[in-house]
Structures are given as structure tokens and as C-alpha cells.
Image (tube, rainbow, N blue to C red; front, side):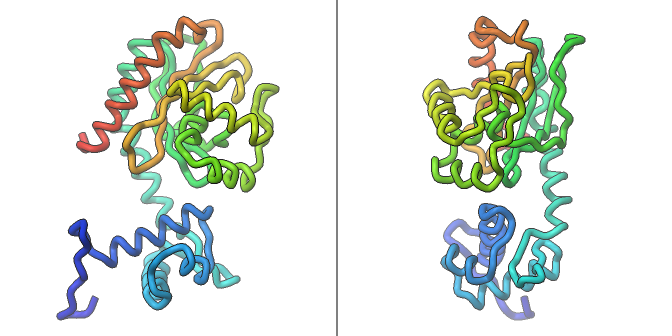
Length: 258
């Protein structure tokens, strides 16, 4: 911004150019991480010169990169920002997840929608010697993880179909959904009961219950998982209310920032 000029305030009280820049980043992310200039123009209400000016700035900062075919993709500097933000999410939720483990005795996980997968950003392990373990930072497909299905159940059907078409539906176990219609039926059941179940879909011998974090600007889900010998129907009767309460507490913590 040159000296003597002023940014236009928005109705929300924010700075217009900042809001527009983040809107472009989110539009690129929603499309899978890459769009042409004309596609951006079609998907946003901004004038083409404004889009071009904002992109030029974002490219110079490393938040966007221009590909050889002249399309625009998310840039490498966003990776560091995302990694730090994910660590902060995990740290914020950790006391709540620790309480879950104390109540239920099984491993608790927090995961975030990360492009077309979920990334685990927090974990508190079970005290049992035999337990489920997923490394923080690991990215897994949406269609066979409890946290992934809890998040997918919050999305419109057409978006789920688009995601599955883009990523494919690789089989992890004999229980993994490998066609979109069976997945959509599972997601409908998830919405009706309020929680997702990974029924030995990611790993044979393990079961996971997951709940989406409500009212969150970022798609998140919290889960508890363990061996099927301990995580059975009676466990679900205890786990689902505890998970629902934990999801609400994490949502509140995100809003208050503490």
C-alpha cells in the first residue's frame, strides 16, 4: 500500500484486501490446491484485475506459486503456517483429550481436514499396553477413518462425490468402503446417530468412534479407538456421550482461544 492510501473497511470491520487474499487462498484450497486465473475469476466475485494484483502479491510472499502452465497453486510458505497451526490445535485440545482417556481408557485423537485427507494433529495414548497408535502429523484417506467419516458427514453429497472421485477409494481392509454409494449410506447413518464408526476399516482388530467438532471454522473431529476386544457396544454407550461432550468443549476452547 502506498503512502497516503487507505484500505477499504468491510462490514465485518476487517481489511478488505486481507479478506480478499484469504478468500483466494481458500478458493484454491477448496479446488484441490490449483486453479487458473480464469477459474478463479469464475469462482469469486472479484474483478479480474483485483485477482491478478492479489495473486502477484501472494506469489511474491511465497503463499502462492505460479506453475509452468500459468495456473496458480498454494505455495510452500503455507506449509509452515499449517504445521504450526496444527500443533497449536493439538495443544489446545490436549487437556480435553486427556480427560477422555481418563474416562474411557482408550486412545484419543484429534484430526483436521487437510485438502483431500485428514491429518492427525493431537493424540493422548491409552494406558493399556495393547492400544491403537497413530502418529501425529500422519495423513490418511477420509473414507476409511472414523475422524474422516465424521468430517465427511458434515459436507454436501456433491462435495463428497467430488472428493472420492479425485482421491479414489483404496481398500485398506475387507471392511473398507470402496464405492461411493456405500460410503454415502454410512455417512447418512453417521448424521442420524451423531457419530461415525470405523468398523475395522482402517485396521483389522480395531474400532473407532468419532464426532465432528461443532461450530468450527476448520473441519475437525475427535475420536477414541482401541482393540475390538475392549471397544465393543457397551463401550459405545459410554464413549459417545463423552465424545460429544469433548467435541463441544474443544469447540468452546477454539472460540475462546483458551
